[in-house]
Length: 431
Image (tube, rainbow, N blue to C red; front, top):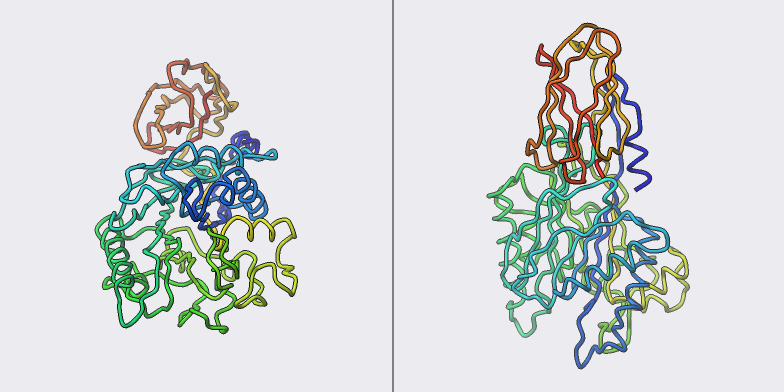
C-alpha cells in the first residue's frame, strides 16, 4: 500500500512521457488445497502447512498476478490463503478476484490473486463449464491516467483441463480436453477478441499434437491464436529433450496426494495472445522470462529432492515446492507501457494539485493563465459518473474546497475539462 500511496503523492508534470512497468505472473496447481479424501486426508494435505509453503514460494517470486488450480470451492479457504499465506510476514499487497462459486465441479476451482497496488479487477466471467469451469479475469493496470479511456486491460484465462492419459487406442480424455479448449476459444472469439490475453493453467497435455493444444495454437481465427513463449512444441511426455519445461511430478513415490513418477510431464502453461507476444496493445512479453520454478533440468524422472542438489532456488523454497504439490509453478513477466503526465499544449491550466488521500474535503490548488470555468467530474473505476462540479479558476493562483464526504471510500478518477475542450485526469483516493 505504501508503494501505491507514494505514486499518488507524485506531483504531475505537464508533459508526456512513456512509463514502463513490469507485471510478474505465477501459475500454480496447489494440489487439492482445502479438499480431503480417503487417499489424501487432512494429516497429509494439511491446509495450514500448505499455506505456509505457498507463502514461501509467493514471497520468493513476488508475482503481481497469481493464478491457481485445484482449490476447494469453499470461499473461506480462499480467504485463508490470502490472509495467512500471501499477506503475511509484512506483505499486505494482495487481493482476491471475484468468483462465481457455482462451477460445474465445485471440488476443484480456479482462483486469481493480484497485487492491488498495481492492478484492479474490472470483471470476471466463466468461458465454459464442461467438466470444469474455465475462468476469464479482466484486470486493469493502475496507470497515471487511470480511466476507461486510457488504462490498459489484461485478460487472464485460467483453465484446468480434464486429467488422464488414454490407453488401448482410446481418446476419451483427449476429446474432453478438446471440448473444453474449443469452448474457451469460441468464447474469446465472440467476446473482446482483440485484447491482451494470457492463457494459463494445468492443461494435463502429453503432446503438442493433442487436439486441445491445437485448438489453442491453431484456432480457426488466426488473430486470436495463442503462442508458447518458449516455443517448446513437441512430445513432452517422458522426453528428456523437454526437461526444462516439465513441471510434474515433483515426487517419485505416491504419498496418497502427490502423483509419483518424477519430473517427466509438461502439464503447466502460460500461453500468450498475439497482442501480448508482439506488444500491440501496450503489454508485451519479456523475452526469456518464462521458466518453471525449481526446474534445473537435472531431475528428469527424479524427485525434486533427489541428488544432485537443486540450486536454482533457495533451500526453503525448494522444500516448499516439494512439500506443497506434485506440480511446479510456472512464471513469466510482461511489460506495460503507459503515457503519463499531461501535455501543456492548448491548456489554460498551468498547474493543478491536491493532497492524496482525502477524507472529507478535496482542497484544490489551481494556477491558470486566465480566468476560466473548469468542469470537474468524478468517475468510479467502472466509468460511472458519481459527482460533477464547475470550478471558477481565477487568473494566477487560486484555491477551491469541495465537500466529497458523500462518496464511499475508494479510488476515483477526477476528470477536468476546460472551455476549449481540453481535458485531463487525476487519481483520487478517498478513505
